[in-house]
Amino acid sequence: VKLVKKTVLIGATNFSQNCGEGKRLLEAHGFQVIENPYQRPLTREEQEQYISEICAVSAGNEIWDREMISKATNLKIISRFGVGFDNIDVEACQEKGITVATARGMNGDAVANMAVAMILALMKKLVFFDRTTREGKWVRCMGHDITGKRIGLLGFGDIAQRVSKKLSGFEVELFAYDAFPNEARAQELNVTFLDLNSLLCSCDVISCHLPSIKETYHMINGDVFNKMKKTAAFVNTARGAIVDEEALYWALKNGTIESAAIDVYEHEPIRMDSPLLTLENIIVTPHTAAESFEAFARVGLNTAQDIVNYFQGKNPSFPLTPKPFE
Ligand SMILES: NC(=O)c1ccc[n+]([C@@H]2O[C@H](COP(=O)([O-])OP(=O)(O)OC[C@H]3O[C@@H](n4cnc5c(N)ncnc54)[C@H](O)[C@@H]3O)[C@@H](O)[C@H]2O)c1
View 1 (spheres, rainbow, N blue to C red):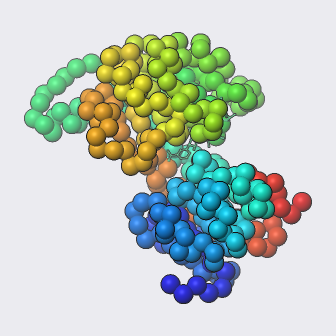
View 2 (view 1 turned 90 degrees about the horizontal axis):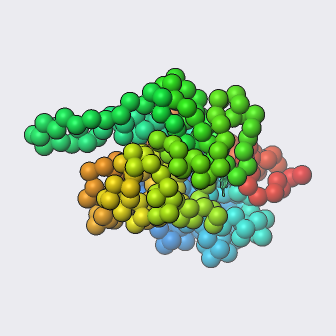
View 3 (view 1 turned 120 degrees about the vertical axis):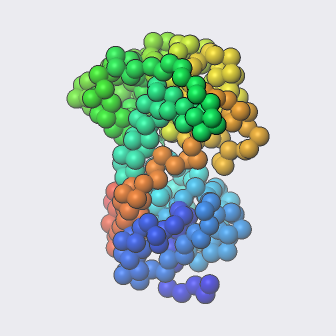
């Protein structure tokens, strides 16, 4: 591709198909859009092909570490196509004056729907029944009712708040643990804050909505599973690095907890020889919690608008690095 005019690299997949409005906005403002043509994150070599030319990135899950950032001599803004920013060295960007922004809240509804769907699916053994029925088995074992259950949310940010709202119709009791508790939102949504230990010991369902940062690395480990009820269901739609996967495997294998539903992994795609895939009491999905037509259209437009705004001297909606125009 011969690069001309202002060039934006899109790391997210299927941008043209799912984010038409965002693409049109960029092109209408004179940007050349380089898309990710694959159904996977771009490799380093693929990023490096364009690295010295691009002035903006809409980052998917490809890696923007210090080394990659140092090669991006024209780069001014990374607008994350999503919420998590564990694949971006924000400090290195800040040092180089590159603005980093996220689409906070734009795909939260889709992820919250997935978390709720996973909770219900675990309670009703939905995926297990589907699998065994197809295999010609007629396995009729018991699930749980969600009514009256104690739901524990790890992290009480945007997505956890949406989960609370959606679950309130199921007549559950809602609890949360957060290092920076938002008391006002908790009160509005009828959620009670607990310390981490009390939440782990007492909840029937534990759903993880923490960011992946060094403080939360393997925060959910063997000791944590040991504290949970034997009947507990664990859901992770946040990030794989928060959970020690080996400990999760043994907790499920040994009946330390009853079941789990996992959308995110330490290494993605999950390796086919992962012992997690041998278990009956786990639901696994390929990091698709945020994949909905509606969420992609919103995120695609937001990321495009952030980039356009930046070059018009305006701040993005959710900057992670200091606002450049103050
Ligand atoms: N599976 C997917 O496709 C998908 C899509 C979007 C977001 N996510 C992930 O979902 C998670 C939550 O996203 P969000 O938009 O709700 O984020 P958010 O920033 O709104 O909420 C995170 C909450 O965690 C709290 N927190 C931060 N550090 C903490 C710590 N050390 N201990 C306890 N609490 C802490 C914060 O105070 C905040 O309330 C993130 O990990 C994000 O990457 C996954």
